[in-house]
Length: 168
Image 1 (cartoon, rainbow, N blue to C red):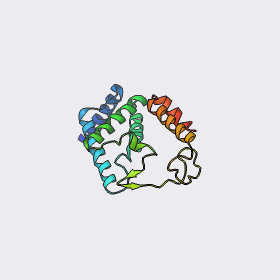
Image 2: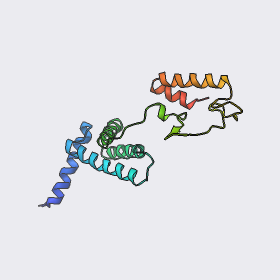
Image 3: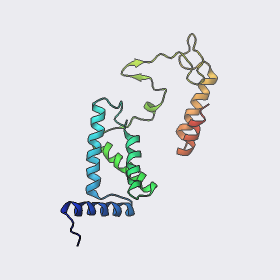
Image 4: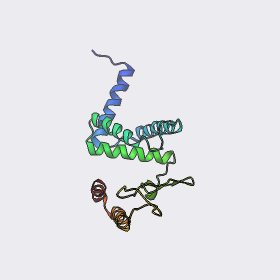
């Protein structure tokens, strides 16, 4: 007769819980909070040590890693991705991280802590700027660039990705 040690029983129970989590597409509350706590400590530590330039610097790798681990545990890709997203949303909420607004995320955002970055080339076509030109080499480039940014703001997610890929 096979006798299981307490450690083997605990590991078996843990494996059964993970299988159950995979079937229902979510982790238990205790495991969720433990993951959030550990991930928040990791994100905070890497940012404070200077290993990442932004508090969101590990978001992509962590989401991909969590999703991969969930998939290896038997989760479907979509449910694994959604769980990874929810975990990271809770992590950033817990550490009080605030995302920049849309304007701050754009290449045109050049003023940071009172420092103006001098432009030497047109924002749209990259021709050298001359004389009084500050951002665009011509009215055509300025109008075209502003229209493109307006279309990006109004586009849904799929259309925005297409517009960004086909920039010029």
